[in-house]
Length: 476
Image (cartoon, rainbow, N blue to C red; front, top):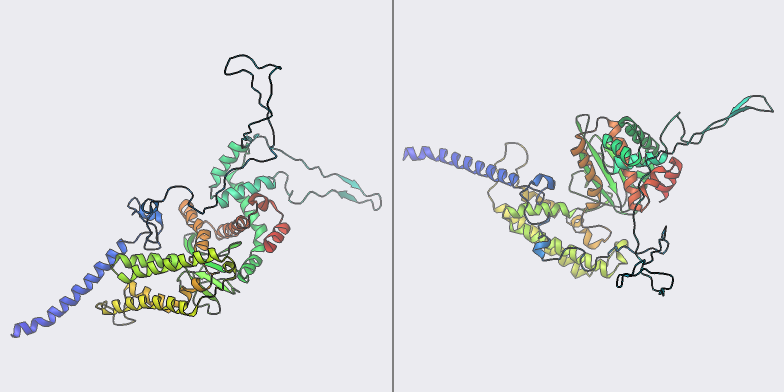
């Protein structure tokens, strides 16, 4: 009996150790099971082992049995014939395909004409148009001093490239992320332009210097506007150090800036903001917040794969609410921009109650599980699903705001799209070699993104003088 009594502390210690190792194995398996569907990892990290479903757990098209191409209700963009073609070629038959005789002047011509149009691009001439400016000088007949004619604005050096070529270089480098050496090859093949890589960098830097003074005013205009601001941040490498690209965008405007810290938010923000669950966003208590449910769906998918039934219920419920809002907007387009639908009181209470019931079930499920081993100091550890449920419960009003405020979208995909290209830059180049290069990219990318959202011609926008560009950006 004495030996058994002495073994009990050892057995209890071993059981505790076994439980600790079991939880560690579960955590390792959870991390190994992460992919683009259940975490923030990019799809490129999935490799060739991709399951046949989308990021939010919905089946793909082949599982939904949808046909390829545009779905019912999709507004197509079919090519139409123009009433004013650039050139017209009249085609007349010369030989009869039935009898083989030649068609002569005695043939009877019918008024019916079949018309087909060919849309094509002229092959570049590979010739460079060089304009020489000769500034003459003379002696003033009144004072006798020497007077020289002034050169046009932008003509500063003995030889330089004009605004058209410069705009194309900036467009290829900043929009399409083509490396400098490949831009040199493209220009040489298509236009016969001999340009060096250093000149490409100089053109982009000069364009950024002209646009940079407009960035604070554009940022302030976006921050204080009425449209919901989509906020996001993504990491980048500058001179071997990690820094952050902060994004603030609307449906019509994009503002980008580089900062050393992830929590360095934009200043002077007002109104509605949409973002993910990063801790710095809820601290801006004076704003109206909306959360990105694309992130929530991925986290819930991960919890669902850990056999947490409540997560599947929450995924289903959020998607039902999203479908309800989307159909309601389609029926009543007057509220889509106003963002204040009138829902019945009992319906609002039902939406909240169902949301609370699912999260109460989640919290009760985790409270019944054995506690995780924790250190002697600090807060008690909680499982990932437990933390997610408490966060959704704590942010209930902001999480469901998209249902009651239709100006708030279901996801933060707008900001995600504006920041996604930075990751592609990191894959291509690895890092920026200077702080100035990263700032140049951010300011030029913001201008190009804004021009595209506004429906402007990007090349024409990049050709504008700084004063004209300021009027267009800050007024448009």
